[in-house]
Length: 294
Length: 108
Image 1 (cartoon, chains in turn brown, purple):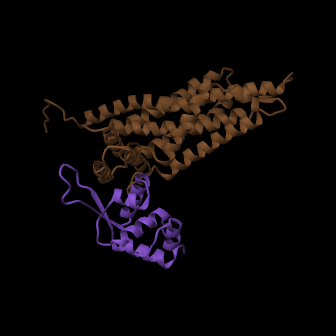
Image 2 (tube, helix red, strand yellow):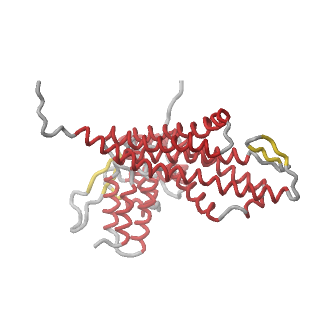
Image 3 (cartoon, chains in turn purple, cyan):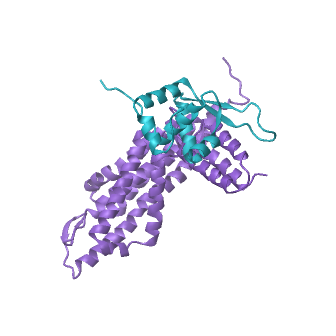
């Protein structure tokens, strides 16, 4: 029966990039030479570190420069905005909900991980990554750039009109379709799900930055609020308290972009991938019982 | 026209190269190298992987492992590995970096 250090080394083997199986065996064999004691534990934990920092075999496993650059730029952008906010409106920190912090920090850590060293399973299918990232960019453009244009055209008084008309169909269509398309083309549920995952995460980090900039750009310290309908100057008894409250509230509300897209992508992508996998099987199944007359 | 050149090896990589070059024909174990050089396994294995990827390190498996134990992975320098070390020595890189690591490069 394996002891804990052996289990740790076995676990570290799963983290190693694909194509590094012989190194997993090498670590395991070295561990077998060590007697029970601290050295065995230290070596096992070091194997985890080795697996996490192991280079991908030449020509394989890299997440791609576009993916890395997108996530790094997104992280720098949103962390920078948070720092700017907390420096400009120090009292806003009191308005930030603990749940916002509890979501923001792990999400940033996960996106940093995706930028630097995503798990092999997420990058092994190059086409799924490429098409997923492309879809994420496209969705971001639709909801961030086309949405305000459409808003100007239809000039609806109800803010939900735009969400119903454009954003919801765009989100459902993109995540569902990319999952379906990859699963159907590659005959793999996983390919569809991975593609939707990349679409969701890329769109999430981009949309979150756009939301932060858009919403916070409406405030300044003099107490002006640039609303959607134009510039309104407020007469405030305590402008700093008012601004801090609203800035804090906005930091809380913009978290929706960061967390919602990946969740929707996985849910809708899974449905699309399931349908795509079914379509692929159906296309490959020969017709039964039929007689072809020539 | 741009000349491309690989990034200079780290001090720890140079130490591994020197240690392997001291006994050029001998196959060495990963843990033995860790112990000798004071480099932890978390750093040692990525170094060995990179050297092997670049063809500077030859790997093999123990032909007669101890009873009941799996065969260990073995390492030794290739000609390309010796060439890299010679190049680093010529540039004074190996000695300078080894001096910082308090190692001697006499045998290299």
